[in-house]
Every structure is written in C-alpha cells, then in structure tokens.
Amino acid sequence: MTIRYDDITITVERGQAASNNMITWLTNNNIATTILTYSSEDVRDALHPLSTWFEDDQQNKIIFETAPVLTFDEVVWESEDGSDAYRKRKYATQTSDLPENFLTLAEKVS
Image 1 (cartoon, rainbow, N blue to C red):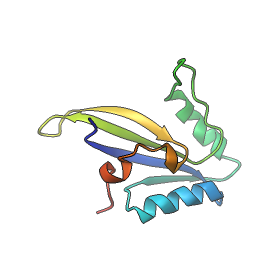
Image 2 (cartoon, rainbow, N blue to C red):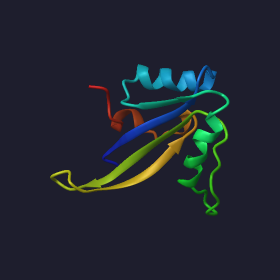
Image 3 (cartoon, one colour):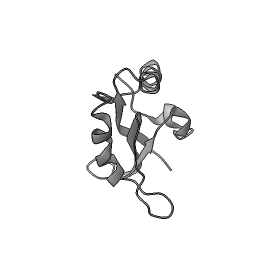
C-alpha cells in the first residue's frame, strides 16, 4: 500500500503547451515539484538520462523523446523513525498516467 508520493520532478520544454499544462495542473493542486526547464534544442539531451531509469514489461528501455516527463517516488514502506524506506521510482508523461490516489498522497507545498 502506498504511503505517499515524493521527490516529484518534472522535466519540461520551455514554451511547450503540454509542459505548461502539466506545470499548471501541479501548481493548481499544490503539489511540491522541482521543475527542470530546457529549451527545445536541449530537452532531448535532458530526457536521455531518464531513459536509463525505466523499462517496459519486456525489459526494454523506455525512451523519452518529448517533454513533459514527471518522475516521482512511490513510498510503500517507511520505518517509524523515517530513517529507512522502500521506494519505487515511477514516471508519467501526462496527468492521466498518474496513479488514482496521486493528488491525495503527493507531497504538497507547505
């Protein structure tokens, strides 16, 4: 069972509609997010390292070629003192890809 979603980072292309829409959605929902913004010339290079983090069901690397890409940790277990946790790294390329409980369990801006 998921405890929370944290370490939320979005990689976006400056001025791109889809990127702007996802940033607006995150902001409107008070989600604590780190925003990494790149020019259209540099965004593919910025997304390349993310392609080393994720695989599909056949264990093929998922290649991200366009922004936005939202990455986050799903915390499924945490010690009582918070010193240790089991996390699963996840991603979404649009808000409809996010888990159903994302808005409820994502870290909020304080």
